[in-house]
Image: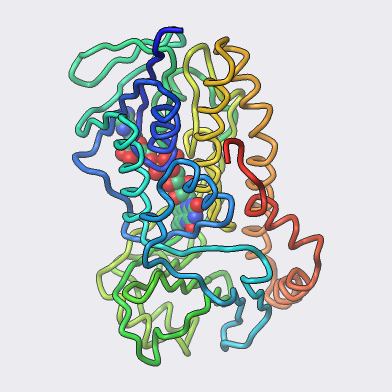
Length: 372
Ligand SMILES: Cc1cc2nc3c(=O)[nH]c(=O)nc-3n(C[C@H](O)[C@H](O)[C@H](O)COP(=O)(O)OP(=O)(O)OC[C@H]3O[C@@H](n4cnc5c(N)ncnc54)[C@H](O)[C@@H]3O)c2cc1C
């Protein structure tokens, strides 16, 4: 068979993983990124066992986790800092927390090593089911496979009419990445989710030098999502965290949460993957994990079956149920956050001890992705 060619829109975790996996299988691959450089929001990211397996399979593991953090435990605490639940991470599979930029560059390097071309300042304006791609500069290209990995606002997905639902979850987060001083304020090595009313603050060490914070609140909490961060408003919710909040200064970026479902993940020669196809609220830390799993699964499917239509159908049938389970559990977890405080605390306490609830929450992390 002649060497097959893929054109990919978007150099995020989904596009770059697909690029690496296809190029490693002998495809010629070109990735278009509209930005001038590879960059992510200044933040950290959780990579659970499933994502680590994908990174291993595409040869990005060592660079991705170098200097990363493996927390001894994940804790849930109330507004006074009292412990509601504690899960020892060693009991429950590995999770690394790393700086996003490092992860993205590791995956990009794996793609380049395999021979994929990554073109910056290259914006895709449209793609057709026949595999034709048009760039902002007017250039046209054709491919055996076009991958729309262009994120939550995917232009290709919308133009192809694939969107079934796009739901704003009513909340969002300010993400902050800041240097760690290693003093009483930021020396704890556990990952801790602090809850107070409808606000929560996720404390995540990312190796020795960096601390990642995610401050989640409702869209109608205007003081809660103001930027620069309103340290006084957040300090009123978490008095014991005031010294930490005061260090944030002008850092931070706000993103609302959304859940996306498509009618189908492909149309003709176009496959949609990552947030473009299945964005989710980040309550389980699995949006990027699902993006990478489904991108690798896509490469495996199209490589195994020369009939693209049947390969894409098999890919979706194999990967979609777990992704939708992840979206459901994440959505449920977000809903619990809106319950009255006592009921919520009771639920977290129960969730920390219920094997069944834990299994629902960790099913994605424990999954062995296709191709690993
Ligand atoms: C607060 C928060 C915390 C999160 N925490 C975690 C976590 O801990 N673990 C985890 O696994 N996931 C997490 N996620 C989810 C994760 O960030 C996303 O699921 C992941 O980034 C999706 O990757 P992607 O490649 O699909 O999309 P993106 O990362 O959005 O990449 C899309 C790329 O396409 C480019 N692009 C867009 N349009 C075009 C175009 N027309 N032409 C060319 N290029 C284009 C964009 O510039 C971008 O580079 C979190 C999300 C949020 C909001």
